[in-house]
Length: 154
Image (cartoon, rainbow, N blue to C red; front, side, top):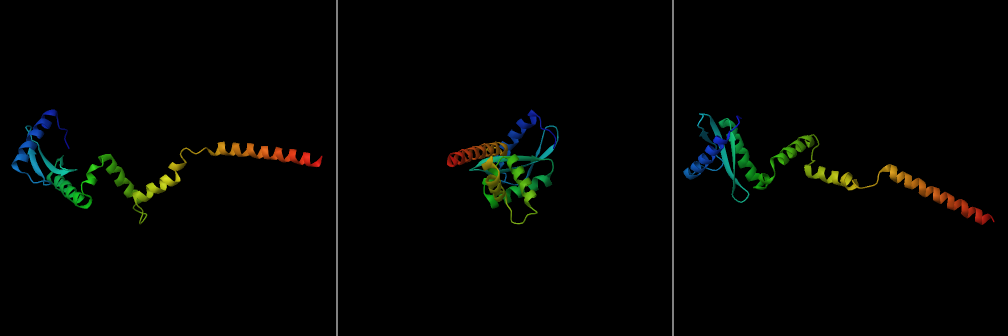
């Protein structure tokens, strides 16, 4: 997609206001022609209690695909799927791809396992610290046993 300069953003706002007043259907792609003659396709829909979202695409096909995905997402997930930031959505998609070969595994299960087997030990002492403490304690017990045996033999 070509970069939009500031002039195009101002024009886009004006086009959005005009098209809203024309009664454009939500989630249906429509074209916008800019001053420089370029045409872009826009998809608008409402999310999260009426907040409007708008996306612009180079081709009508990309816009129609995005519109279908948005409609399916709203039907399947309600507006909750849109409330996640885009980078989190991308991470989730990558996690799903990684888990795909393992039938029945989900992101929720993976997170639960990670918390149980990794994060809860984040502040645990290191193995070297625990082994030093263990050795020191054993030495004290050995010395105490030797002293006890010496006293018992007297």
